[in-house]
Structure formats: structure tokens, C-alpha cells
Amino acid sequence: MKQFVWLALVFFSFRSGAQDFTQFEKRVFTNAAGDSLPYRILYPADYDSGKNYPLVLFLHGAGERGTDNEMQLKHGVYTFLQAEHRANFPCIVIAPQCPKEDYWANVDVNRSTQPFQLNFNYQQPLRTPLALALELVRQTIKKEAVDKKRVYITGLSMGGMGTLEAVNKHPKLFAAAAVVCGAGQVEAFEKKQAKLPMWLFHGADDLVVSVEHSRAMVDRLQEFGAPLRYTEYDGVKHNSWENAYAEPELLPWLFAQKR
Image 1: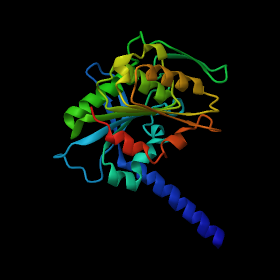
Image 2: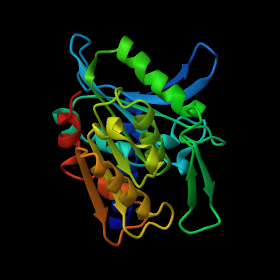
Image 3: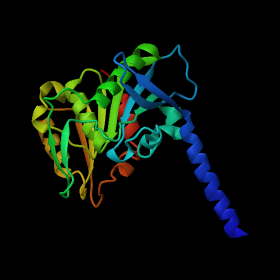
Image 4: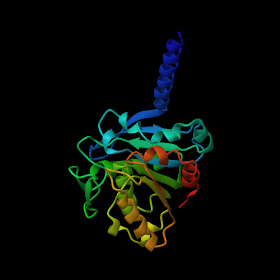
């Protein structure tokens, strides 16, 4: 009987967790050229169109690519669903999904090495999924009750790479960025990008995306006196998003930033 009750509680907890994600409305963004991007959007609990809310763009990792419009909620973004955070930091959250065959960032990935070998090329135009995501952000700013001075971006792994390329090419769109186990074209960052407040996170034992990528980015940004924070987790591998998005100071720091 005890085992049955325990299983019932586990099932109920699982179902409750799954139901929470239904608060992220399912939508598809289509631009004038006919390109489309599935995304989920979360509104504040007591959304009032007469107010202006912060907007967060969340970019998922490579393992969550697809077209089901569900997998992109698997990691990290759950922090915005926590009751305490919804009460203290009401915001609009956009979580688009990158197609399986594509990538957020302009990067060639050699998966035969450990960690992966990454070669970035910011000379190329934004890849279609990231371009669509940024176009979606701009459309949301126009159509919804968004505080234009408080637009943020965050992403993990492949999403962290997309986050860095987005702020490199469009630094004035965002008020701050949180980058988790990401990487980017270090030499492409100059003084204008270094003005943006950023918080980078990485696991010291990451065997997928080397921690050296974040260390090099931090060194580069510090050359320009960037308002930067960096957290490195000893003994943590690639799943540093579990630590980063649980940081008690992350959301207070993020939402305190303004353009």
C-alpha cells in the first residue's frame, strides 16, 4: 500500500510538472518571407496590457532541436515558472525551437574530439533560426506590453553560443545576457559589446564545450572593462545549466539591468 501511495505521488508530481509547462503558450512565428519558427511564450501570472514587463529570450541547447515545440523547455527555462520567481519577477519569456538540421550560431562543430572543436565565423549573416528569433523579439516588443529598456537574452550550450553571437551583432537590443556553457568568436568582441552586462557560467570539467571558451571570453571582455560576472563550477561537467539557473542571484541580477 505504501508503495502504491509513493508511486501515486510520483505520478502526480510528474503530471503537475508537465501541466506547469502548458502555461507556455504554443505558437509559430512566420516572417514576411514565409520562414517560420515554433516558439513558446510565457506571460506574467496577472498580465496587464497597461503595464510594461521585462522580456526574456531563452535559447535551448542542441539536444532540444526539432519541431515538436516542446523539447526546448527541457532545461533551464523552468526557473521562470517557479512560483516565487513569477511573483517577484513578472516577465514575458519567449522560448523558440531551432530546427534539428540547423544551429543558432555560425559555428562548425567537430564532434569527434572531446571536448568538441568549435570554429566560429561571425563574418556570416545570422543563421535563419537566430535571425527569426531576434525578429520575433522585435515583433513582441511592438505588439505586447514590453519594457524596451529591459529586454534580456540567455541560453545554454548551443543556446549560449547563439546568445553570444546575438549580443555581438545586436548589442543594443538587450539590457543583459546570461550565457551558460557557451562559446563564441572571442576576437570579434570589442568595446561596444563589452558595454553590455553579462554573466557567464561554465562547468570546470565540461567535456562537450570546453571551459576554456568561457575563460577566453571573460579575459577578452575584461580587457575593455566590461560589467561582467563569471561563475565556474568545480567538478561540474556539461550540465552546468542545473547550477546556473538555480543561482539565487541570477534573476535579481538580470532584472536589475536596464539599457
